[in-house]
Length: 148
Image 1 (cartoon, rainbow, N blue to C red):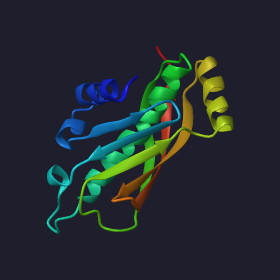
Image 2: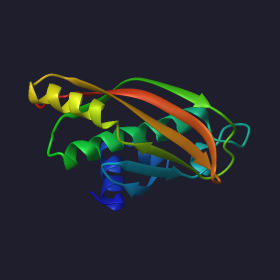
Image 3: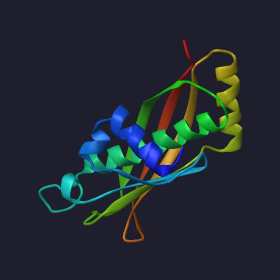
């Protein structure tokens, strides 16, 4: 899936991505990078609203799971189980979230569970960056539900 295809998919399937004005910069089974401007995500302090930063990070992490599943020819419904965000500094301009695919051993456990027709859990992290500087970190756990 190209960045443009992933962006269209997110805008169609996850309408919040439209409201956040999310743009997909990089899309691959090993890494996803999404960006968003300050303007639709601004808070009363002229920085990014924490909920927007969290949502952009979740979108990047969710997307890397989607693309990794597709690269492996697997299907499933991806849902977030839990997530935590550390905000390291205010974000006062366009920002991006960078998510990398889970470790190989963890991914093997996921594929084995799906092969048995069972839900599978996987941990994914994303970092927030603004102007080349780290601004936060999301750590989440997603569940992939096998096709019915």
